[in-house]
Image 1 (tube, rainbow, N blue to C red):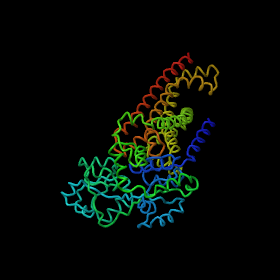
Image 2 (cartoon, rainbow, N blue to C red):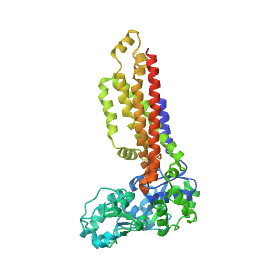
Image 3 (cartoon, rainbow, N blue to C red):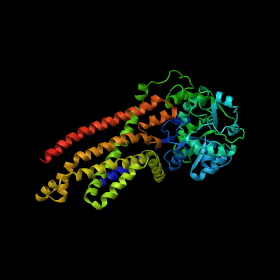
Image 4 (spheres, rainbow, N blue to C red):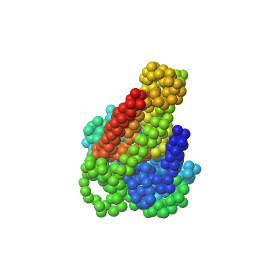
Length: 492
């Protein structure tokens, strides 16, 4: 068993190392698109897409899990550096240098925050500016989770304008457009380059107190990138000033309104929109897209590497809990408590503990979640072995180890396999959440579908995950019948 864990943790340590330029992005449409544009411009690069909010992506950058990602000057100044002013690129670089990161390559557009209402609703209530919101405390807000938590978001805005509205529950940015169109909310936060502003007939409220800073798009990068990836960095510098606000709106529209994939949008930009043809992709086209086998491989790796580790530890723990009654409650209680921790909370804890994102924290989290069914079923299977069988084995002169190996474990095997099957099926579903920390798998499509509010992309991630769960369950049921028969034959 020692060699297994040595190989397992060697794999974990090596999986986070790469000499390929790693580009990150946040979990909203524009960031996905910019990430794909950067990857295509750099040449030899990989995209760790949809990693989460500013805090997670910036932590990934500082830890070396990614090398650069598209960011905005206002976000860097207000959210990362906690400054109350915009110091310019030179000032940002001075403040960021002690962290080992810097900013460069202004892409050419400003994408500011704003609050918006439907045009008809704003006209009806006479609301034109953010200050006017203070006169209408009854308005229902639908704000993104990140905007609610940012210093340059809702907390600062509420204080600056003296707004009476209570802080609402967070709402995914992509879903907020549907909610405001349906009249479920009155006000939402937008990015000024959003493609859906015109489509949903929204009006951005004037920032009459100049609360929001400029959010000029730049590259936030590790300071060693220009030396480590000199050729790629030279290519990325050619993007400076090439994307104006109108171009960015067109690119966002290609993804959100025309249903193009993020990689297709990057090709569209690269071609100067000369390839701007075709319509919304159909479900089967998305399902069997060029990323299908890559995502399948990532998902299988997440599920079965973590499952193998949980089997290697879970079965001995189950045996130990059955043989040592004093340790039983502690072992079963510990693995039970792990199972109650929400998956995203566990991922966040592991990211903070390990200082990295991606495959490593995902594998450890899935390994921990898979322990409970295996440990509990091993314990229960051994407990179910009849006292008469143990006494007969003792009468034959078998040692404790021989009794366990030849009698108890074969009889407990159906229960153990049932526990492994349960863990495997749980892992298939839980592995989709690993995409939120850049570990890939089918969850990558689910996260992208949420950002785009695209049902085809959502289903293209959910359907293969569900199909894989059914296949895994069917395979284990066949294994249970076969090994159950073999165990029965061995005890005759």
